[in-house]
Amino acid sequence: MALMPFTDSMFLLVESREHPMHVGGLQLFRKPDGAGEDFLRGLRDDLLKADGVPPLFRRRPARPVNTLGYLAWIQDEDIDLDYHFRHSALPQPGRIRELLELTSRWHSTLLDRHRPLWEIHLVEGLRDGRFAMYSKIHHALMDGVSALRHLQGTLSDDPDDHDCPPPWGSRRAPRERTRGTRSLLHTARTSLEQLAGVAPAALRVAREAFREHTLTLPMQAPRTMLNVPIGGARRFAAQSWPLARVRSIAARTGTSRNDVVLAMCAGALRDYLIEQSALPDAPLVAMVPVSMRKQTEVQSSGNQIGALLCNLATDKSDPAIRLATIHHSMREAKRIFNELTPVQALLLSGINVAQLGISTVPGVVSNTRPPFNLVISNVPGPRKQMYWNGAALDGIYPASVLLDGQALNITLTNNGDNLDFGITGCRRSVPHLQRLLLHLDTALSELEAAVA
Image (cartoon, rainbow, N blue to C red; front, side, top):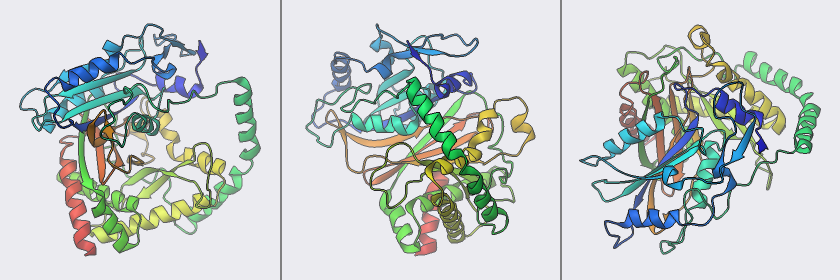
C-alpha cells in the first residue's frame, strides 16, 4: 500500500457526477494495407496476451467510497483487462459525427473507483475504413501532458513495426513518482528557502500590471455564458488543420505559432458568442499553460510550466489587430515570468489558477468574476508520422477536464504536419459546440487574408 500524495487525493476528493476528473483522448488510425475485417479483433486479442501491466495501471484507491478522504493507493493484483480494454462499433452511417457523439458519452461517465482508474475503447465501423481509439485515465494518476507522452511511447515511426506495446504499456514505462519522507521534506525545505524571493517578484509583477499596464491579471475577465456552474454531460468536437498554414501566418507577422493558434481561438470564440447573442464588451481572457524554461537552458529536470493570462482581444473585429494584441499580451507575460526564478514563476502562476480549487464551493462561481474565461492549451505531440502496429496515426484529439465556471476547454497538439484540436464543453452550458469547428476554420482563413 502506497500513501497517496495530497495532489492525488484532491483530484479524487473534488470529483463528483458533475465534475469527472479524468483526462482523455481520441486517436484515429488508418489500417495497414491488406488488413482484413478481423484486424481489430485480432489486434485486441494479441494485446490482451501481452505480458505484464505496469504498476501505475494497476493502481486504485484503497478506500473507493467517498467518506473522509483518500489516504492510499493499492495495487490490483488480478486486473480484468477485458473490462478496461473494450471493443466497440459505431452505429450507421459511421460518420465522424457518430464517433464524436460516442466519445462525448464516454467522456461524461465516471471511472469505477473499485478498479484501476482507466479505460480504453477500440472503435470500428467508420465508413471511411479507419478505426479509432478513445482512452481516459484519472487525473490523479496522470495529467494530460503525461498521458500524451505515454501514448507516444507506444507508437513507432516504422510502418513495418507490428510489435508495439498495448496502450497500458510503453517502451519507456512512466516512472513512479518519489513518495519518500526524505524527498517530501527536501521539497518542502527547498520551497521555504525560495519563498522569500516571491515577495519581490510579486512587487515586480504588480508594478508592471498597475503602473505600466502590460500584464493581464486574474479577475479582469468578463462574465460570459461559459463561466457558469456545469452539469456532468459533455460534448466533444475535434478537427485538424495543416500546421503549414499557421506557420506561414506566424512568419509573415513576426509572431509565434502559439500566438496564431490563440488568434484562431479568439476569432472562433468571438463569432460563436455573437451567434449566441452573448459577446461581452470586454475582451475574453484565456489561461495559457506555457513552458517557462530559459532559452539558454540546455538540460533541466522537473516541470517548469507557467500559467499565463492572455488578452484574446475578442472586442476587436479586425483579425490582424487581434493577433497583434495577443502577441503583445503573451510577450509581456513571458518577459516578466522569464525574469523570475522557476520557483517564483510557478508560485505566481498559482495565483492565476487558485480560484479553480474553490470553484465547486456553492455560490462561488455565481457570485464572483471568473479568474479567466477558459483554458487554451497547446501540448507537444509527435513531429513525424507515427504508427501503431502498422496502422498510421491520423489524428490525436485531447479531451480535457471541466470545472464550475469553466464550461469550455480547447486543447490541441501537433501531429506530424497537422494541428489536432480537441474541444470539450458542458453539454448544458455550451450549445452547438461543433459550431466552434466551423468558426475556427473561418478565423484561420480571415487571418490568412488579413496578412496576405
